[in-house]
Image (cartoon, rainbow over all chains, first blue to last red; front, side, top):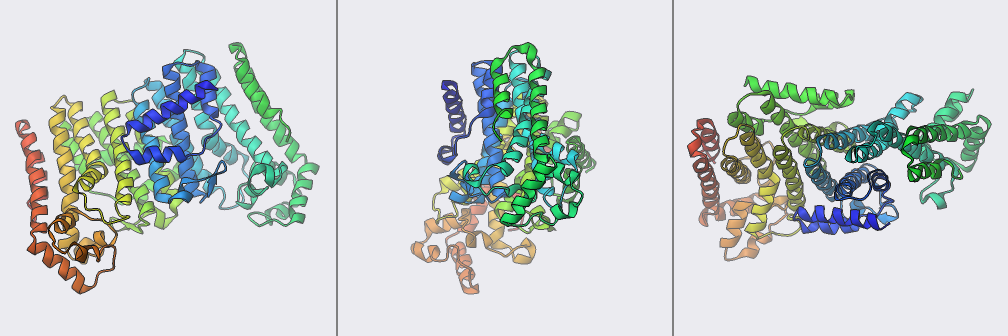
Length: 298
Length: 298
Protein backbone atom coordinates (compact mmCIF):
# COMPACT_ATOMS: atom_id res chain seq x y z
CA UNK A 1 0.00 0.00 0.00
CA UNK A 2 1.37 3.35 -1.14
CA UNK A 3 -0.19 5.08 1.87
CA UNK A 4 1.81 2.94 4.27
CA UNK A 5 5.03 4.35 2.76
CA UNK A 6 3.62 7.78 3.51
CA UNK A 7 3.23 6.72 7.13
CA UNK A 8 6.82 5.40 7.19
CA UNK A 9 8.03 8.68 5.71
CA UNK A 10 6.09 10.62 8.33
CA UNK A 11 7.68 8.57 11.13
CA UNK A 12 11.11 9.36 9.67
CA UNK A 13 10.26 13.05 9.54
CA UNK A 14 9.10 13.04 13.16
CA UNK A 15 12.25 11.24 14.32
CA UNK A 16 14.45 13.53 12.21
CA UNK A 17 12.73 16.45 14.00
CA UNK A 18 14.33 15.29 17.24
CA UNK A 19 17.68 16.34 15.81
CA UNK A 20 19.52 13.20 16.89
CA UNK A 21 21.41 11.25 14.23
CA UNK A 22 21.65 8.16 16.42
CA UNK A 23 17.85 7.95 16.73
CA UNK A 24 17.51 7.97 12.93
CA UNK A 25 20.07 5.15 12.68
CA UNK A 26 18.17 3.12 15.26
CA UNK A 27 14.88 3.74 13.45
CA UNK A 28 16.35 2.14 10.32
CA UNK A 29 17.21 -0.98 12.30
CA UNK A 30 13.66 -1.60 13.52
CA UNK A 31 11.94 -4.54 11.88
CA UNK A 32 8.86 -3.59 9.90
CA UNK A 33 5.54 -4.84 11.12
CA UNK A 34 2.24 -5.32 9.36
CA UNK A 35 1.09 -1.86 10.45
CA UNK A 36 -2.35 -3.16 11.41
CA UNK A 37 -3.14 -0.02 13.40
CA UNK A 38 -2.30 2.27 10.47
CA UNK A 39 -4.36 0.20 8.06
CA UNK A 40 -7.28 0.49 10.45
CA UNK A 41 -6.91 4.27 10.83
CA UNK A 42 -6.62 4.82 7.08
CA UNK A 43 -9.61 2.60 6.30
CA UNK A 44 -11.72 4.62 8.74
CA UNK A 45 -10.39 8.15 8.23
CA UNK A 46 -9.11 8.05 4.66
CA UNK A 47 -5.75 9.45 3.61
CA UNK A 48 -5.14 13.01 4.80
CA UNK A 49 -2.24 14.83 6.42
CA UNK A 50 -3.97 14.41 9.75
CA UNK A 51 -4.65 10.70 9.37
CA UNK A 52 -1.10 9.99 8.20
CA UNK A 53 0.24 11.90 11.23
CA UNK A 54 -2.06 9.96 13.54
CA UNK A 55 -0.81 6.69 11.99
CA UNK A 56 2.80 7.75 12.51
CA UNK A 57 2.13 8.60 16.16
CA UNK A 58 0.41 5.29 16.83
CA UNK A 59 3.12 3.26 15.05
CA UNK A 60 5.83 5.08 17.05
CA UNK A 61 3.98 4.25 20.25
CA UNK A 62 3.61 0.62 19.17
CA UNK A 63 7.32 0.44 18.28
CA UNK A 64 8.25 1.99 21.64
CA UNK A 65 6.17 -0.57 23.51
CA UNK A 66 7.88 -3.39 21.58
CA UNK A 67 11.33 -1.94 22.38
CA UNK A 68 10.50 -2.08 26.09
CA UNK A 69 8.85 -5.47 25.66
CA UNK A 70 11.98 -6.94 24.12
CA UNK A 71 14.04 -5.81 27.11
CA UNK A 72 11.49 -7.35 29.47
CA UNK A 73 11.31 -10.63 27.55
CA UNK A 74 15.08 -10.61 26.88
CA UNK A 75 14.11 -11.23 23.26
CA UNK A 76 16.93 -11.61 20.74
CA UNK A 77 14.77 -11.21 17.69
CA UNK A 78 11.70 -9.27 16.64
CA UNK A 79 9.90 -10.20 13.45
CA UNK A 80 12.89 -12.27 12.36
CA UNK A 81 15.40 -9.44 12.73
CA UNK A 82 17.79 -8.97 15.65
CA UNK A 83 16.21 -6.80 18.34
CA UNK A 84 17.80 -3.48 19.38
CA UNK A 85 18.67 -4.89 22.80
CA UNK A 86 20.41 -7.83 21.10
CA UNK A 87 22.25 -5.58 18.60
CA UNK A 88 23.32 -3.10 21.28
CA UNK A 89 22.07 -3.30 24.87
CA UNK A 90 19.08 -2.78 27.12
CA UNK A 91 19.99 0.86 27.66
CA UNK A 92 19.67 1.69 23.98
CA UNK A 93 16.38 -0.16 23.68
CA UNK A 94 14.85 1.51 26.74
CA UNK A 95 16.01 5.00 25.78
CA UNK A 96 15.09 4.74 22.11
CA UNK A 97 11.67 3.56 23.29
CA UNK A 98 11.43 6.65 25.49
CA UNK A 99 12.44 8.88 22.57
CA UNK A 100 9.73 7.39 20.33
CA UNK A 101 7.12 7.57 23.09
CA UNK A 102 7.86 11.18 23.99
CA UNK A 103 8.08 12.36 20.38
CA UNK A 104 4.73 10.69 19.69
CA UNK A 105 3.25 12.45 22.74
CA UNK A 106 4.76 15.75 21.64
CA UNK A 107 3.01 15.44 18.27
CA UNK A 108 -0.20 14.29 19.96
CA UNK A 109 -0.16 17.37 22.18
CA UNK A 110 -0.71 19.47 19.07
CA UNK A 111 -3.73 17.46 17.88
CA UNK A 112 -7.37 17.50 18.99
CA UNK A 113 -7.63 17.14 22.79
CA UNK A 114 -9.91 14.10 22.70
CA UNK A 115 -7.56 12.34 20.27
CA UNK A 116 -4.54 13.20 22.44
CA UNK A 117 -6.33 12.00 25.57
CA UNK A 118 -7.55 8.75 24.01
CA UNK A 119 -4.17 7.70 22.62
CA UNK A 120 -2.12 8.71 25.70
CA UNK A 121 -4.58 6.95 27.97
CA UNK A 122 -4.26 3.79 25.85
CA UNK A 123 -0.51 3.83 26.55
CA UNK A 124 -1.19 3.84 30.29
CA UNK A 125 -3.55 0.91 29.83
CA UNK A 126 -1.09 -1.03 27.69
CA UNK A 127 1.70 -0.50 30.22
CA UNK A 128 -0.57 -1.69 33.02
CA UNK A 129 -1.49 -4.66 30.82
CA UNK A 130 2.19 -5.49 30.35
CA UNK A 131 2.74 -5.34 34.10
CA UNK A 132 -0.21 -7.69 34.68
CA UNK A 133 0.95 -10.02 31.91
CA UNK A 134 4.21 -10.47 33.79
CA UNK A 135 2.45 -10.85 37.17
CA UNK A 136 0.02 -13.43 35.81
CA UNK A 137 2.96 -15.70 35.00
CA UNK A 138 3.95 -15.92 38.67
CA UNK A 139 1.42 -18.62 39.49
CA UNK A 140 -1.18 -20.57 37.50
CA UNK A 141 -3.96 -18.08 36.75
CA UNK A 142 -7.38 -19.71 36.45
CA UNK A 143 -9.36 -16.46 36.29
CA UNK A 144 -10.89 -15.72 32.90
CA UNK A 145 -11.71 -12.22 34.13
CA UNK A 146 -8.04 -11.46 34.84
CA UNK A 147 -6.96 -12.90 31.48
CA UNK A 148 -9.55 -10.88 29.57
CA UNK A 149 -8.74 -7.68 31.45
CA UNK A 150 -5.03 -8.19 30.76
CA UNK A 151 -5.37 -8.76 26.99
CA UNK A 152 -7.89 -5.93 26.80
CA UNK A 153 -5.27 -3.57 28.22
CA UNK A 154 -2.13 -5.07 26.71
CA UNK A 155 -3.31 -5.77 23.18
CA UNK A 156 -6.72 -4.24 22.55
CA UNK A 157 -6.35 -0.77 24.10
CA UNK A 158 -4.12 0.77 21.43
CA UNK A 159 -6.07 -0.84 18.57
CA UNK A 160 -9.31 0.45 20.13
CA UNK A 161 -7.77 3.92 20.51
CA UNK A 162 -6.61 3.84 16.88
CA UNK A 163 -10.07 3.05 15.56
CA UNK A 164 -11.78 5.50 17.89
CA UNK A 165 -9.47 8.44 17.13
CA UNK A 166 -9.67 7.76 13.39
CA UNK A 167 -13.46 8.02 13.73
CA UNK A 168 -13.11 11.26 15.74
CA UNK A 169 -10.93 12.68 12.96
CA UNK A 170 -13.74 12.34 10.40
CA UNK A 171 -16.76 12.70 12.70
CA UNK A 172 -17.86 9.09 12.35
CA UNK A 173 -19.51 7.06 15.14
CA UNK A 174 -16.57 6.86 17.57
CA UNK A 175 -18.20 4.39 19.96
CA UNK A 176 -19.00 1.91 17.17
CA UNK A 177 -15.45 2.03 15.82
CA UNK A 178 -14.02 1.86 19.36
CA UNK A 179 -15.94 -1.38 19.92
CA UNK A 180 -14.78 -2.71 16.56
CA UNK A 181 -11.16 -1.92 17.47
CA UNK A 182 -11.44 -3.40 20.94
CA UNK A 183 -12.89 -6.66 19.66
CA UNK A 184 -10.38 -6.79 16.81
CA UNK A 185 -7.64 -6.53 19.45
CA UNK A 186 -9.16 -9.16 21.72
CA UNK A 187 -9.79 -11.57 18.82
CA UNK A 188 -6.28 -10.93 17.50
CA UNK A 189 -4.76 -11.90 20.87
CA UNK A 190 -6.97 -14.99 21.23
CA UNK A 191 -6.10 -16.14 17.71
CA UNK A 192 -2.43 -15.69 18.61
CA UNK A 193 -2.97 -17.75 21.78
CA UNK A 194 -4.69 -20.49 19.77
CA UNK A 195 -2.00 -20.61 17.05
CA UNK A 196 0.62 -21.13 19.75
CA UNK A 197 -1.01 -24.52 20.30
CA UNK A 198 -2.15 -25.56 16.83
CA UNK A 199 0.82 -24.50 14.71
CA UNK A 200 4.23 -26.10 14.56
CA UNK A 201 7.38 -24.26 15.55
CA UNK A 202 8.54 -23.79 11.93
CA UNK A 203 5.38 -21.82 11.09
CA UNK A 204 5.47 -19.87 14.35
CA UNK A 205 9.16 -18.99 14.16
CA UNK A 206 9.45 -19.96 17.86
CA UNK A 207 8.93 -23.14 19.88
CA UNK A 208 5.30 -24.28 19.79
CA UNK A 209 3.29 -24.19 23.03
CA UNK A 210 5.76 -21.68 24.43
CA UNK A 211 3.05 -19.64 26.17
CA UNK A 212 2.32 -22.32 28.77
CA UNK A 213 6.03 -23.05 29.30
CA UNK A 214 6.51 -19.31 29.95
CA UNK A 215 3.71 -19.31 32.48
CA UNK A 216 0.97 -17.78 30.32
CA UNK A 217 -2.39 -19.42 30.92
CA UNK A 218 -4.11 -18.32 27.72
CA UNK A 219 -7.73 -18.82 26.71
CA UNK A 220 -7.50 -22.47 25.52
CA UNK A 221 -5.69 -23.45 28.73
CA UNK A 222 -8.24 -21.54 30.83
CA UNK A 223 -11.13 -23.45 29.25
CA UNK A 224 -9.25 -26.75 29.48
CA UNK A 225 -8.48 -26.19 33.17
CA UNK A 226 -12.10 -25.34 33.89
CA UNK A 227 -13.28 -28.52 32.20
CA UNK A 228 -10.71 -31.06 33.37
CA UNK A 229 -11.69 -33.23 36.27
CA UNK A 230 -8.08 -33.80 37.23
CA UNK A 231 -6.97 -30.15 37.22
CA UNK A 232 -3.68 -31.01 38.89
CA UNK A 233 -2.64 -33.04 35.87
CA UNK A 234 -2.52 -29.76 33.91
CA UNK A 235 -1.18 -27.66 36.75
CA UNK A 236 1.74 -30.08 37.12
CA UNK A 237 2.90 -29.24 33.58
CA UNK A 238 2.77 -25.47 34.15
CA UNK A 239 6.04 -23.64 33.37
CA UNK A 240 7.77 -26.94 32.54
CA UNK A 241 9.74 -27.84 29.46
CA UNK A 242 7.21 -30.20 27.92
CA UNK A 243 8.08 -33.66 26.61
CA UNK A 244 6.51 -34.92 23.38
CA UNK A 245 4.12 -37.05 25.43
CA UNK A 246 3.09 -34.11 27.52
CA UNK A 247 2.36 -31.82 24.58
CA UNK A 248 0.35 -34.64 22.97
CA UNK A 249 -1.63 -35.11 26.17
CA UNK A 250 -2.46 -31.40 26.33
CA UNK A 251 -3.53 -31.32 22.69
CA UNK A 252 -5.68 -34.43 23.10
CA UNK A 253 -7.39 -33.04 26.18
CA UNK A 254 -7.95 -29.74 24.37
CA UNK A 255 -9.80 -31.74 21.73
CA UNK A 256 -11.76 -33.97 24.12
CA UNK A 257 -12.98 -31.06 26.24
CA UNK A 258 -13.54 -28.85 23.16
CA UNK A 259 -11.43 -26.20 24.89
CA UNK A 260 -9.66 -25.38 21.64
CA UNK A 261 -12.85 -25.37 19.55
CA UNK A 262 -14.63 -23.12 22.02
CA UNK A 263 -11.65 -20.75 22.15
CA UNK A 264 -11.94 -20.37 18.39
CA UNK A 265 -15.68 -19.83 18.73
CA UNK A 266 -15.09 -17.16 21.36
CA UNK A 267 -12.70 -15.26 19.09
CA UNK A 268 -15.23 -15.59 16.27
CA UNK A 269 -18.05 -14.32 18.46
CA UNK A 270 -15.99 -11.22 19.32
CA UNK A 271 -15.29 -10.73 15.62
CA UNK A 272 -18.94 -11.00 14.62
CA UNK A 273 -19.92 -8.53 17.35
CA UNK A 274 -17.38 -6.10 15.91
CA UNK A 275 -18.76 -6.52 12.40
CA UNK A 276 -22.25 -5.97 13.78
CA UNK A 277 -21.14 -2.78 15.58
CA UNK A 278 -20.07 -1.11 12.36
CA UNK A 279 -22.62 -2.61 9.98
CA UNK A 280 -24.27 0.78 9.34
CA UNK A 281 -20.92 2.18 8.23
CA UNK A 282 -20.81 0.05 5.09
CA UNK A 283 -17.09 -0.34 5.51
CA UNK A 284 -16.42 -3.57 3.63
CA UNK A 285 -12.66 -3.40 4.14
CA UNK A 286 -13.02 -3.46 7.92
CA UNK A 287 -15.47 -6.35 7.70
CA UNK A 288 -12.96 -8.23 5.57
CA UNK A 289 -10.04 -7.55 7.93
CA UNK A 290 -12.04 -9.09 10.74
CA UNK A 291 -13.31 -12.00 8.63
CA UNK A 292 -9.79 -12.84 7.48
CA UNK A 293 -8.73 -13.02 11.10
CA UNK A 294 -11.51 -15.24 12.42
CA UNK A 295 -12.26 -17.40 9.42
CA UNK A 296 -8.71 -18.65 8.96
CA UNK A 297 -7.39 -22.19 9.35
CA UNK A 298 -6.35 -22.98 12.90
CA UNK B 1 6.46 23.13 52.59
CA UNK B 2 2.74 22.49 52.82
CA UNK B 3 2.34 22.99 49.07
CA UNK B 4 4.69 20.09 48.32
CA UNK B 5 2.29 17.74 50.15
CA UNK B 6 -0.40 19.06 47.83
CA UNK B 7 1.79 18.03 44.89
CA UNK B 8 2.32 14.57 46.41
CA UNK B 9 -1.42 14.23 46.94
CA UNK B 10 -2.04 15.23 43.33
CA UNK B 11 0.42 12.60 42.08
CA UNK B 12 -1.43 9.99 44.15
CA UNK B 13 -4.74 11.10 42.68
CA UNK B 14 -3.39 10.89 39.13
CA UNK B 15 -1.96 7.40 39.72
CA UNK B 16 -5.17 6.28 41.45
CA UNK B 17 -7.01 7.46 38.31
CA UNK B 18 -5.23 4.72 36.36
CA UNK B 19 -7.31 2.19 38.29
CA UNK B 20 -4.41 -0.14 39.02
CA UNK B 21 -3.78 -1.09 42.66
CA UNK B 22 -0.26 -2.34 41.91
CA UNK B 23 0.75 1.07 40.53
CA UNK B 24 -0.36 2.76 43.76
CA UNK B 25 1.68 0.26 45.78
CA UNK B 26 4.75 0.94 43.64
CA UNK B 27 4.25 4.70 44.00
CA UNK B 28 4.46 4.33 47.79
CA UNK B 29 7.81 2.59 47.42
CA UNK B 30 9.46 5.42 45.47
CA UNK B 31 12.01 7.39 47.44
CA UNK B 32 11.13 11.03 47.89
CA UNK B 33 13.33 13.60 46.23
CA UNK B 34 13.87 17.25 46.93
CA UNK B 35 11.20 18.19 44.36
CA UNK B 36 13.38 20.95 42.92
CA UNK B 37 11.22 21.21 39.80
CA UNK B 38 8.03 21.65 41.83
CA UNK B 39 9.61 24.27 44.05
CA UNK B 40 10.64 26.16 40.94
CA UNK B 41 7.17 25.96 39.38
CA UNK B 42 5.44 27.08 42.57
CA UNK B 43 7.85 29.96 43.11
CA UNK B 44 7.13 31.20 39.60
CA UNK B 45 3.43 30.42 39.19
CA UNK B 46 2.17 30.50 42.78
CA UNK B 47 -0.11 27.85 44.24
CA UNK B 48 -3.18 27.15 42.12
CA UNK B 49 -4.94 24.00 40.94
CA UNK B 50 -3.17 24.39 37.61
CA UNK B 51 0.31 24.87 39.06
CA UNK B 52 -0.09 21.93 41.45
CA UNK B 53 -1.18 19.74 38.50
CA UNK B 54 1.78 20.90 36.45
CA UNK B 55 4.10 20.06 39.36
CA UNK B 56 2.57 16.59 39.64
CA UNK B 57 3.03 15.96 35.91
CA UNK B 58 6.67 17.08 35.98
CA UNK B 59 7.47 15.05 39.12
CA UNK B 60 5.87 11.94 37.55
CA UNK B 61 8.00 12.45 34.44
CA UNK B 62 11.11 12.91 36.57
CA UNK B 63 10.28 9.77 38.58
CA UNK B 64 9.70 7.81 35.34
CA UNK B 65 13.06 8.87 33.97
CA UNK B 66 14.75 7.76 37.21
CA UNK B 67 12.99 4.37 37.07
CA UNK B 68 14.43 3.81 33.58
CA UNK B 69 17.77 5.26 34.67
CA UNK B 70 18.05 2.78 37.53
CA UNK B 71 17.52 -0.12 35.12
CA UNK B 72 20.19 1.29 32.80
CA UNK B 73 22.67 1.89 35.62
CA UNK B 74 21.72 -1.37 37.38
CA UNK B 75 21.37 0.80 40.49
CA UNK B 76 20.39 -0.96 43.72
CA UNK B 77 19.49 2.17 45.59
CA UNK B 78 17.94 5.54 44.87
CA UNK B 79 18.18 8.30 47.45
CA UNK B 80 19.19 5.77 50.08
CA UNK B 81 16.18 3.49 49.52
CA UNK B 82 16.19 0.25 47.52
CA UNK B 83 15.31 0.92 43.89
CA UNK B 84 12.23 -0.68 42.28
CA UNK B 85 14.43 -2.83 40.04
CA UNK B 86 16.30 -4.05 43.13
CA UNK B 87 13.09 -4.70 45.09
CA UNK B 88 11.40 -6.48 42.17
CA UNK B 89 12.94 -6.61 38.70
CA UNK B 90 13.72 -4.59 35.59
CA UNK B 91 10.31 -5.35 34.09
CA UNK B 92 8.47 -3.69 36.95
CA UNK B 93 10.74 -0.66 36.85
CA UNK B 94 10.43 -0.20 33.07
CA UNK B 95 6.67 -0.67 33.03
CA UNK B 96 5.95 1.47 36.07
CA UNK B 97 8.07 4.15 34.39
CA UNK B 98 5.92 3.82 31.27
CA UNK B 99 2.75 4.09 33.36
CA UNK B 100 3.97 7.30 35.04
CA UNK B 101 5.16 8.76 31.72
CA UNK B 102 1.94 8.02 29.86
CA UNK B 103 -0.33 9.19 32.70
CA UNK B 104 1.67 12.43 32.87
CA UNK B 105 1.26 12.85 29.09
CA UNK B 106 -2.46 12.08 29.35
CA UNK B 107 -2.86 14.89 31.89
CA UNK B 108 -0.65 17.19 29.82
CA UNK B 109 -2.82 16.60 26.77
CA UNK B 110 -5.65 18.39 28.60
CA UNK B 111 -3.54 21.46 29.41
CA UNK B 112 -2.53 24.47 27.31
CA UNK B 113 -0.97 23.32 24.02
CA UNK B 114 2.27 25.25 24.48
CA UNK B 115 2.71 23.80 27.96
CA UNK B 116 2.00 20.27 26.68
CA UNK B 117 4.44 20.72 23.80
CA UNK B 118 7.21 22.18 25.96
CA UNK B 119 7.09 19.45 28.60
CA UNK B 120 6.71 16.51 26.16
CA UNK B 121 9.53 17.86 24.04
CA UNK B 122 11.75 18.08 27.13
CA UNK B 123 11.20 14.35 27.66
CA UNK B 124 12.48 13.64 24.14
CA UNK B 125 15.53 15.78 24.87
CA UNK B 126 16.18 14.12 28.20
CA UNK B 127 15.93 10.65 26.66
CA UNK B 128 18.36 11.66 23.90
CA UNK B 129 20.61 13.09 26.62
CA UNK B 130 20.52 9.77 28.48
CA UNK B 131 21.44 7.93 25.29
CA UNK B 132 24.38 10.29 24.71
CA UNK B 133 25.48 10.04 28.34
CA UNK B 134 25.83 6.29 27.83
CA UNK B 135 27.57 6.69 24.47
CA UNK B 136 30.02 9.24 25.83
CA UNK B 137 31.31 6.63 28.26
CA UNK B 138 32.47 4.37 25.41
CA UNK B 139 35.72 6.23 24.87
CA UNK B 140 37.42 9.21 26.49
CA UNK B 141 35.41 12.26 25.42
CA UNK B 142 37.49 15.41 25.20
CA UNK B 143 34.82 17.55 23.55
CA UNK B 144 33.39 20.26 25.81
CA UNK B 145 30.64 20.84 23.24
CA UNK B 146 29.45 17.23 23.47
CA UNK B 147 29.54 17.31 27.27
CA UNK B 148 27.58 20.57 27.44
CA UNK B 149 25.02 19.37 24.90
CA UNK B 150 24.57 16.14 26.84
CA UNK B 151 24.00 17.76 30.25
CA UNK B 152 21.80 20.39 28.64
CA UNK B 153 19.53 17.62 27.36
CA UNK B 154 19.84 15.13 30.20
CA UNK B 155 19.64 17.43 33.20
CA UNK B 156 18.69 20.95 32.14
CA UNK B 157 15.85 20.32 29.64
CA UNK B 158 13.16 19.31 32.14
CA UNK B 159 14.16 22.03 34.63
CA UNK B 160 14.07 24.58 31.79
CA UNK B 161 10.66 23.28 30.70
CA UNK B 162 9.38 23.48 34.28
CA UNK B 163 10.39 27.12 34.67
CA UNK B 164 9.14 28.05 31.19
CA UNK B 165 5.73 26.40 31.53
CA UNK B 166 5.26 27.88 35.02
CA UNK B 167 5.84 31.31 33.45
CA UNK B 168 3.38 30.51 30.63
CA UNK B 169 0.77 29.58 33.25
CA UNK B 170 0.85 33.08 34.75
CA UNK B 171 1.81 35.10 31.67
CA UNK B 172 5.28 35.97 32.92
CA UNK B 173 8.36 36.36 30.69
CA UNK B 174 8.72 32.75 29.51
CA UNK B 175 12.09 33.22 27.79
CA UNK B 176 13.69 34.77 30.88
CA UNK B 177 12.45 31.96 33.12
CA UNK B 178 13.45 29.36 30.51
CA UNK B 179 17.01 30.70 30.59
CA UNK B 180 16.97 30.70 34.37
CA UNK B 181 15.81 27.08 34.41
CA UNK B 182 18.32 25.99 31.80
CA UNK B 183 21.25 27.56 33.66
CA UNK B 184 20.01 26.22 36.98
CA UNK B 185 20.04 22.76 35.41
CA UNK B 186 23.49 23.16 33.88
CA UNK B 187 24.97 24.59 37.09
CA UNK B 188 23.26 21.84 39.11
CA UNK B 189 24.91 19.16 36.95
CA UNK B 190 28.32 20.85 37.05
CA UNK B 191 28.15 21.22 40.84
CA UNK B 192 27.29 17.51 41.02
CA UNK B 193 30.29 16.72 38.80
CA UNK B 194 32.58 18.84 41.01
CA UNK B 195 31.32 17.31 44.28
CA UNK B 196 32.11 13.85 42.89
CA UNK B 197 35.77 14.93 43.10
CA UNK B 198 35.88 17.16 46.18
CA UNK B 199 33.67 15.24 48.60
CA UNK B 200 34.46 11.99 50.38
CA UNK B 201 32.43 8.85 49.83
CA UNK B 202 30.67 9.11 53.20
CA UNK B 203 29.17 12.49 52.26
CA UNK B 204 28.34 11.37 48.71
CA UNK B 205 26.78 8.07 49.72
CA UNK B 206 28.74 6.42 46.91
CA UNK B 207 32.44 5.93 46.09
CA UNK B 208 34.18 9.25 45.44
CA UNK B 209 35.46 9.96 41.92
CA UNK B 210 33.08 7.35 40.58
CA UNK B 211 32.26 9.42 37.47
CA UNK B 212 35.68 8.95 35.90
CA UNK B 213 35.80 5.25 36.83
CA UNK B 214 32.43 4.86 35.10
CA UNK B 215 33.74 6.57 31.99
CA UNK B 216 32.20 10.00 32.51
CA UNK B 217 34.56 12.79 31.52
CA UNK B 218 32.88 15.60 33.41
CA UNK B 219 33.74 19.30 33.35
CA UNK B 220 36.72 19.25 35.78
CA UNK B 221 38.28 16.34 33.84
CA UNK B 222 37.64 18.12 30.53
CA UNK B 223 39.47 21.23 31.72
CA UNK B 224 42.25 19.14 33.25
CA UNK B 225 42.71 17.14 30.04
CA UNK B 226 42.86 20.32 27.99
CA UNK B 227 45.53 21.79 30.23
CA UNK B 228 47.76 18.80 30.91
CA UNK B 229 50.85 18.50 28.81
CA UNK B 230 50.97 14.75 29.30
CA UNK B 231 47.37 14.01 28.35
CA UNK B 232 48.04 10.28 28.21
CA UNK B 233 48.82 10.26 31.93
CA UNK B 234 45.14 11.08 32.52
CA UNK B 235 43.79 8.97 29.68
CA UNK B 236 45.58 5.93 31.13
CA UNK B 237 43.50 6.20 34.30
CA UNK B 238 40.19 6.38 32.42
CA UNK B 239 37.63 3.76 33.47
CA UNK B 240 40.09 2.19 35.91
CA UNK B 241 39.60 1.39 39.57
CA UNK B 242 41.81 4.12 40.98
CA UNK B 243 44.45 3.54 43.64
CA UNK B 244 44.93 6.07 46.46
CA UNK B 245 48.01 7.39 44.67
CA UNK B 246 46.12 7.81 41.42
CA UNK B 247 43.21 9.71 42.99
CA UNK B 248 45.74 11.95 44.79
CA UNK B 249 47.54 12.61 41.52
CA UNK B 250 44.30 13.60 39.79
CA UNK B 251 43.30 15.90 42.65
CA UNK B 252 46.75 17.52 42.74
CA UNK B 253 46.73 18.11 38.99
CA UNK B 254 43.20 19.53 39.23
CA UNK B 255 44.62 22.05 41.71
CA UNK B 256 47.80 22.85 39.77
CA UNK B 257 46.00 23.44 36.50
CA UNK B 258 43.10 25.24 38.24
CA UNK B 259 40.75 22.84 36.42
CA UNK B 260 38.64 22.43 39.54
CA UNK B 261 38.63 26.13 40.42
CA UNK B 262 37.64 27.08 36.89
CA UNK B 263 34.87 24.45 36.83
CA UNK B 264 33.43 26.08 39.93
CA UNK B 265 33.76 29.49 38.27
CA UNK B 266 31.97 28.20 35.19
CA UNK B 267 29.03 26.93 37.26
CA UNK B 268 28.97 30.27 39.09
CA UNK B 269 29.00 32.20 35.82
CA UNK B 270 25.98 30.21 34.60
CA UNK B 271 24.26 30.92 37.90
CA UNK B 272 24.90 34.66 37.75
CA UNK B 273 23.64 34.78 34.16
CA UNK B 274 20.44 33.12 35.36
CA UNK B 275 20.01 35.63 38.18
CA UNK B 276 20.60 38.43 35.68
CA UNK B 277 17.97 36.99 33.29
CA UNK B 278 15.21 37.27 35.89
CA UNK B 279 16.36 40.38 37.73
CA UNK B 280 13.33 42.40 36.58
CA UNK B 281 11.02 39.79 38.08
CA UNK B 282 12.04 40.65 41.67
CA UNK B 283 11.79 36.99 42.58
CA UNK B 284 14.08 36.81 45.59
CA UNK B 285 13.36 33.12 46.23
CA UNK B 286 14.65 32.12 42.81
CA UNK B 287 17.75 34.24 43.26
CA UNK B 288 18.35 32.53 46.60
CA UNK B 289 17.89 29.03 45.18
CA UNK B 290 20.58 29.78 42.64
CA UNK B 291 22.89 31.49 45.13
CA UNK B 292 22.62 28.58 47.55
CA UNK B 293 23.70 26.28 44.75
CA UNK B 294 26.72 28.21 43.51
CA UNK B 295 27.96 29.83 46.72
CA UNK B 296 28.30 26.59 48.64
CA UNK B 297 31.47 24.97 49.97
CA UNK B 298 33.07 22.65 47.46
